[in-house]
Amino acid sequence: MHAGLARRAIVIFLVELLAFLPMEGTASARQEQSAAPARQDQPLATYLRKPYMELFQISPELRFSTGQLDSERKSLGEAKDRCAKRFKDQSKQYEKQLEAAREELKKKSSTITPEERNAIHCRIQNLDLLQSESAVLSQHAIPTAYANLQAKLDLIQKWPAVYRETESEIASGAYHQRRWGDVQDIGFRQIASDQQDDIKTGQRAVEEMKRAGLLPPELKNEAIQEYVNSVAQRVAKNSDLKIPLHVTVLQSREINAFALPGGYLFVERGLLEAADNESELAGVIAHEIAHDAARHGHKLMKRATIASIFFQAAQIAAIVLTGGVAGIGTYYALQYGFYGLGLVLNLKLLGVSRDYELEADRLGAQYAWKAGYDPAGFVRFFDKMATVKGYINGVSWFRTHPPFYQRMVDAQREILFLGEKPSMVVQTAAFERMKQELQPIVTKAEQEEKEKPSLLIPRAEGCEPPQKIEYKPGQPIEDLCGAPMRQVPEQKPKN
Image (cartoon, rainbow, N blue to C red):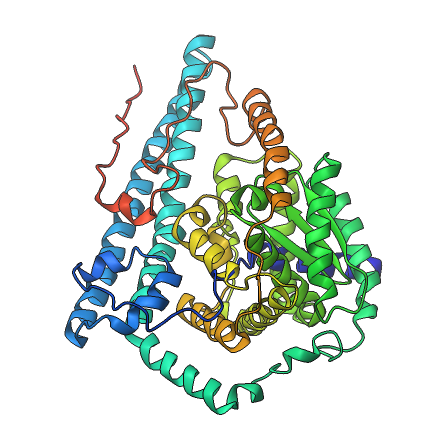
């Protein structure tokens, strides 16, 4: 009985890990759509680099023809295929060189000097890293980047009509009839009954994750722990959660947060680094609280087919995260999604999970709004993740989610339905103090990562720093497609 519960507990963690739910809103819940007309003096492709929130504002004034939109859509599809193929081919080249280096080591193992052996070790691990990065780019990051661009193209084309429909619903009062439209009754309505039944499940999940090494250590800073707890409790008091909320900040650079059943919320350090203001942080937290209020974890545990697959991933994750024997390639496969592990996951099985994401997006926006936060922080944070940061530490977050366009439009419609509240919070002095408190912790953690053995730095001694794909932090991933590819000279074995 306990083993079954433990297995299910890990499933919830991994489902949430794959489904980081960064949603956040803009500075005004009902933006001035009919403000100054947008100047359509730029190529269509240029508009696709603009943030979602800006596109919501200006798209009603843009006048691109159907032919222009279809042509751009076709160009994006072709560019994605070319770019993905480029890095797929590069991955194969690195794989061949990797095999050659390993074969050289095997043949010369008994005759080479220690220096020669170490040089081959260094070359192998460098090629291993390059091959993994190329595979991740071709299989995950590049398709995700172009899916994001396609979503913005859809927004330019479709949002004006959806906006008019939304305004009509607001004018007629029909929007009150939407699901969970009774926002004035938040806290007094019932989203899911028997939330208290999940408490023991959550407790077991936390215990099992700690035993399996799946839970990073707590961040050792009382001020930061108290600050994040205060934001989370503010949102929880203005939500439909009817059980106590337990909040823990974890010492991990992953940009993530996840909720276990029973009111157990974990926020990773990387999320605090990535958020630019308190409304963004509150938007993510509100989304996670919505998962618990709607008992999504409890419902997902019933999907045994998914459970068996994710439990396999959990076993491998435990090896990696506890510093066990695992290659850099395995690390990257885990970091960028369990697909890289060769696990067969039918995305149709995640249909319910996708529905849950949309539900949590809507409820999360409502909870942030009710707590006095600008609910648009949700959209802004998502945009930032999808455009830049997500490719570094969270490609898998976007693989199990609903299509970007659907998610962004549903969120914006909910923000418009909610309307503005006086003095909605975007930034606070407490958030800025937290950031100051966090900086030396981040600096120390980064230094420690450089000085101790890690799957991210060379395992062989005396190696040059590992080469990396020509990606610069903050650069849109699709920019890689036009950059010259670094070539690693193939080193043939010496006779």
